[in-house]
Image (cartoon, rainbow, N blue to C red):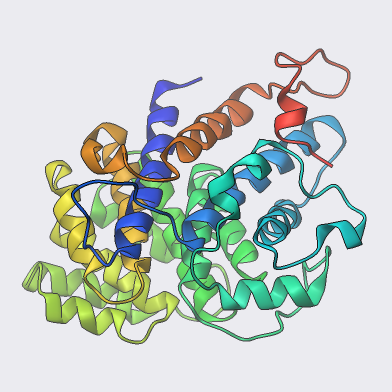
Length: 342
């Protein structure tokens, strides 16, 4: 297992749950006590679970479309939340270790587009139109980990396909752009190179032009970094595009390794429900690694151990396939129980 890949994956997911928790508190971090997750952080964890399961399934029983595996993961989240009745479907949704984490059963804020789709469409949603047309930022938040699973050339398409389970139009472009950025930052690419390549990948998605807001945000950061009013302008629409533009503005304003705390706090004050802070945490965590994250906060984040374990397991699955391949002896006989690839 490549140490660099593990560090990047840990940085991304730990930064994500850190940004999610601080953003959920609107940057008003108490002096003591746990920092709870929001539904966005919870769903991002289930995205990773679904991606690992898709890979396990492909190794042992033949291909499973990753968006379908992620959809089933979201249904497990919904069953834990009481949003759907898994028992009535007669399917083993609540398997794997993630379903046993008490914090993931806690109701932590709305995810209306996701919940509407989960209630409306059952187990085979891929290729269908979501019951609501929404451009909201949760499509980006929950697809950020795709950048640690897929190569840079594939991350945009996979993130957009997963976002399309519940969102439409510009939200898919925003998800593809940001997942590509996560991957490139994990390889220590510069901000300028990352922005250029992410733009190129997003163009190829075919969902329409890449929003000018992304380039405008980077230009604004170069001209007047750290301007709260400028950030509020990106956040105000409450869209996926606005959240990504705001996150780009924050990252470009605070690119230094030792300023992640400042960056997350600045993003959390944007007033968008913490989505910008979550994206910023994932981007800067992937870029600078887990050691750069503020440990005093990180140690109090509710999902920190979940994110740490998931990130390590994601890299281990990609690099080692611990459950084995068809006809081989598994290196870890319990891996299938942890991530059943049904």
